[in-house]
Length: 467
Picture 1 (cartoon, rainbow, N blue to C red):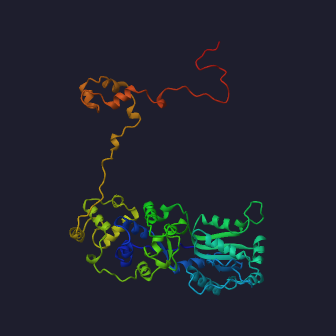
Picture 2 (cartoon, rainbow, N blue to C red):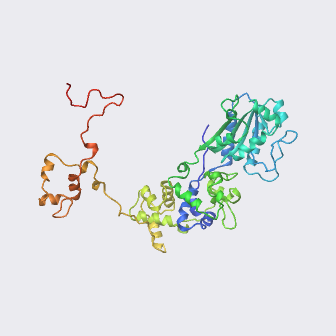
């Protein structure tokens, strides 16, 4: 199965988008570059990519079996069972249900193309008459797993279906594009039934997961880069966003966003909105202007580099290059960004015509620095704590010298010896005097070989003569 292609926001799109710049205005100057780093790390999945992946996943299910397809949805608090009194699925609300709307339509298309083995949301009587023992529950992404576990428990509320489940006649396959690896255990633990080893049909053996992207919730560097701690602090410190939403629902902090919906396990600063904060993706919906940016179909707002906005980090980059700093790693450290963002920022500057491929300022780049209203304040590099490696002495360097070397420095009154040592005139080096006065470390002292502890020493101490 070929890997789906993710789309990402380029630095050029982030810099030139008026909507993004309005959202960035809510941050302080020191936080803006971190917010831009967050945006550059988001992965977007289009509707076509998701639908193609779902079709391939269904086609790769074991053949010659019948499958009942259901879209996972969040039930109302007053709905305990997924089935009505006649054994049919409860009616879907008339309002939009977010990601479930797309999944529901995709299931309908899949069943029409292969109605011999696939059934679209069948009733209990349909499951019985068609002898279907395989249920496929479909979603786009799973965060904490609460919605999936509650949905399965609602299915098990029907007595007939519960008996099938208890006898091991039903197997459930959960297909979702992305999920944390810990969600599988949470879902299994929350659904009805026993997972005891003595049970003939353990509930964990009756559930299978199929996902394209499985990630570790705590391994944030994989998703957000080496500066992930700054992104976490940015989200935590945004008090205008609800506390439960700052790191996403369940504190998953996912970076995956679908064209058809924005999962609530992504950072809340992206989608949370109230009278104090306006999310970039308000209502957890991907706006059309952002889709145009991702697809490269947006109308260019700036026809030349002279009219393009110049951010503080872009000016800092040009100033660093002017000073001779050209390594990407050095630029990243001085700008307090990760290597990925620094590399993309350099590409953006080159695209605007400010830098050459060899990281040299062009005439336009020089003009931009001259036109800067205020001098660019570059991060100051603290050299006070820098110690050359040649100055560092290891354990072997401070041991007492032997042989000719020792004899050449045996007298501390020698002016030549004092000049060679690191003490002042008339004083021996403290390092050398300490090394001479101190006893050698225990690790270099001669020691007797250790004896076995398995039995008593019946031969007496080493070196003693037998009598």
